[in-house]
Length: 102
Image 1 (tube, rainbow, N blue to C red):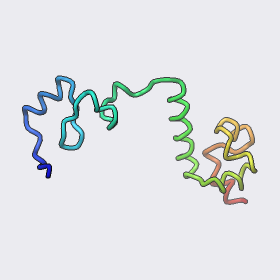
Image 2 (image 1 turned 180 degrees about the vertical axis):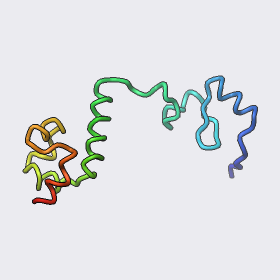
Image 3 (image 1 turned 90 degrees about the horizontal axis):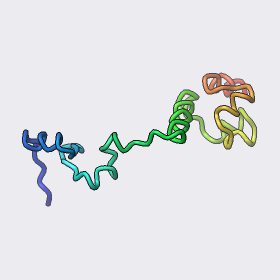
């Protein structure tokens, strides 16, 4: 059985040496990326930025279901990007109003 302890000052000094806190545990730098503990490993690619923008639009649209997309945009709606959906006349900001009209 694993015993949990409080984080000590010594452990916090280890944090400065490259190990990262995860909850009340210190993670070995070799495995910290599996737990999302290292911000420096985060991808800054164009694909990552596009994915982030898409998720933000999804949240802005009220987290619609696949059937909501079909009701507003038609059968191709779920596979479209947000730019294609906006070109079809309904942006993420307008999605809930358009859904209410259907």
